[in-house]
Length: 231
Image: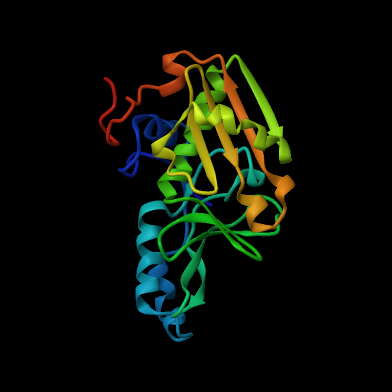
């Protein structure tokens, strides 16, 4: 397997996430979707689904990032594969193979959401970019927090009042998983496994406290569109 440094980070990411990908990401060789297009078409996979897979592979294919905190590290690297669905429900496809043995797959939904699928579909982030932003936030917050506290299961409900005083971190594009920013802390809430596996005790929250402004924002100005960060 050939490994390549990231010289051209895809757009649509904050400076924090671009730096994270450029410094910590590599590209591995993956197969071209076009090589298998006819094979999928012959098995009644719609052409527009194959087009979506090809676009995903062109943008993200082969990108290998450091492991995520939850989901046993997340996908090993991005690679479009295994389309499944119906014309009525829409079509999902695999976003990358698992790093470890876990009971679900990482998938891209008909709407472009990144999530996990087993007995049920659990969209984690509205886009792949949201997943990458969350990885970058985890790396950044872990470096600058004075204390990291883990909360699990029903105890996550006890954070509701604290979250009411916080603002969501928009670049994470959170769905089942969300990030929140307070005056001196960041909070990550992970509910994907709980939803996907019907396992409420699988909810987890990580609280990164003791953060200054740099720790809270990492150069990403509050309310700025992506790409318009502080110099």
